[in-house]
Image (cartoon, rainbow, N blue to C red):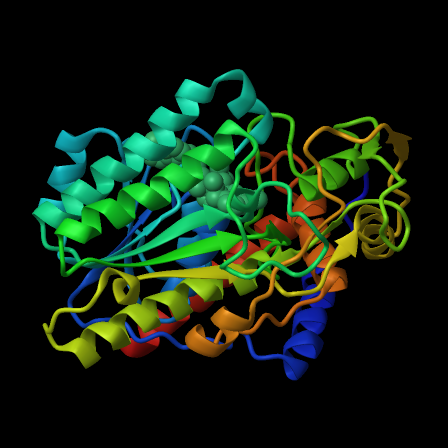
Length: 407
Ligand SMILES: NC(=O)c1ccc[n+]([C@@H]2O[C@H](COP(=O)([O-])OP(=O)(O)OC[C@H]3O[C@@H](n4cnc5c(N)ncnc54)[C@H](O)[C@@H]3O)[C@@H](O)[C@H]2O)c1
């Protein structure tokens, strides 16, 4: 393996890229003196969201039991932003310790990522998924209510829609019918939030149904870092390219799609992270508009699909990754996998209109960013490349200079 990326090349790339696109389309206003609690914030989507929150000036506290992540992701976020992110090693099902964190900080909102996400594992251990994802959500929302923290943004999933009957883009009104315990646990967790907020009339939620998050922050300093063999397409591909896995299995090439392989709606994780800021902004605005007046449950619990509205086939993603990496992803076509639909694509119109959230990045950028992360961090947060070490030093130096200038 050779890691020849130089800081100068990287800075040139980022400058040319962001000359065309702003670093964050979304500006979300912090609530002065108040914190946002991010559960599961050390994980893949959580760490990217914490980064965007910090860039927007929010004060963030993270709770994570590190069952599928490492604290180093947050240390890197701190280095990139120069902002402290208090971390607490707590399981969200541990009410006693969770309550202590609610006592310690004045939260105005919670973003709830903490959960298990492997469809495959959920089929083997359905109880584990129900307990972690559903009871974790229940305990968290009970703590929120006891501490009068009114706002939650929840990581839900397009797996709630099960196997769509046709290939049309899915709206939030599409039939629900999860076909595995993971999807069932996410549906049940949505219901738990809704039921608890039926009683607690100040409660407001955005339930965000993610399609297929991929990519990484443009810095290449944080990214997806599964502890086990990845279940999702992108980390599987990138780990194959760095030699950790032998080849990619493509499940079926006889679907009624452009090239016969399954089509999914991939969304850049930074776009998705910005979607959480957009959701927070919506909750804050609604709270201001209502000014304490009562609102119906439907007005307080809002559901949004988080996808781009554009689908890419497995082979199109492979092709983009070949271009991004300058390598060839080795793959074999195998039989279809049970429960896989031909096409699952979001209709993001509701999130576009109501959250003013639009995605910016296409599949080529998603793959380039995912590859930068994986190639510079082949062992995740351990044994980083020289490029990563240099870039971390660069950020540290810049932050120290900024801090000195402010004194
Ligand atoms: N990545 C996807 O494709 C995808 C798609 C749809 C929905 N989601 C949901 O988004 C959320 C974040 O996903 P991700 O991809 O970042 O996964 P991830 O595994 O990287 O992050 C989840 C984090 O939650 C932590 N965690 C799990 N159970 C916990 C518990 N009981 N208490 C405290 N911390 C706990 C893990 O250690 C991890 O840091 C999950 O809830 C997942 O179900 C993910």
